[in-house]
Image 1: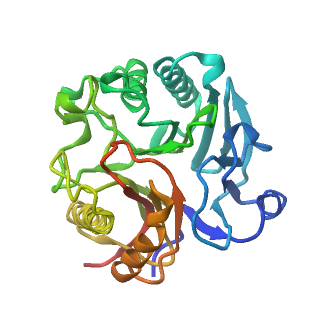
Image 2: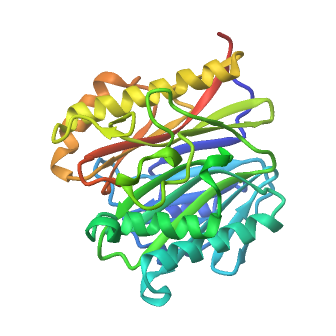
Image 3: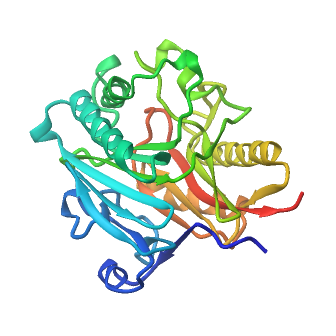
Length: 334
């Protein structure tokens, strides 16, 4: 058996309001298909990506409490005993272009963490409207990466401790850049995938500033360990594989997830991550018409008991059609 998990994650069919009014250990409730500007409670995190499968569900995070809530500048947060969830949504119409908005978001995030009892970011999710719009270095994802780097001010040559992260395109009509995160009282163990070039070492062809994230981060609290998996696509080395072949891309993404989990096991030695009902997978799909093929492909490859949800979202490269991220529990033993 695993020790009591620090972060208990699940997909639930009850509406968000029921969870927000319910158990006193609820850290966050993520509701899909709604603008992040519609947040009704610091623990309520609407996400603009539409759910493609059914029934409609919310993603619920629970942790040891009591849960305290509040705000810091534009950031809203919920704080448990050892973990914090924070989120912000900056209206691009009010904050200027993507680079400036991204820099502002990460300035706020960092200023909040500096005064928080939970100063260590463990995983960050970024939902970027129209992520592939613009040509060359004007592409919005590249502009987002520039803004993030302006704020973080890290020299990639220093091999910095970077948390896991996901960056997915929200609908072009969504007005807000959304960033949310999980932070802890202790740093996580950052993990790289041996099959992939570390993101911060990407060559110049992918933009003027490389993405700043680790492939995964292991959360270690309360004697338990959980693997926070970054957005994982069909990239081997630094190159996209299986262009225009969505099922093959999904399979390659899943191989990368397995490789990352194996690397985590090598680093931890005494425990290993397992895809089971104590974790979740989130599958992002560029074209809704690919949903059924992707669902069938994942059903054939992933254990049946790990909950998963399918969301419509563009991937950071135009030739990538799908991506996976997740939170996975680790179990003692070889």
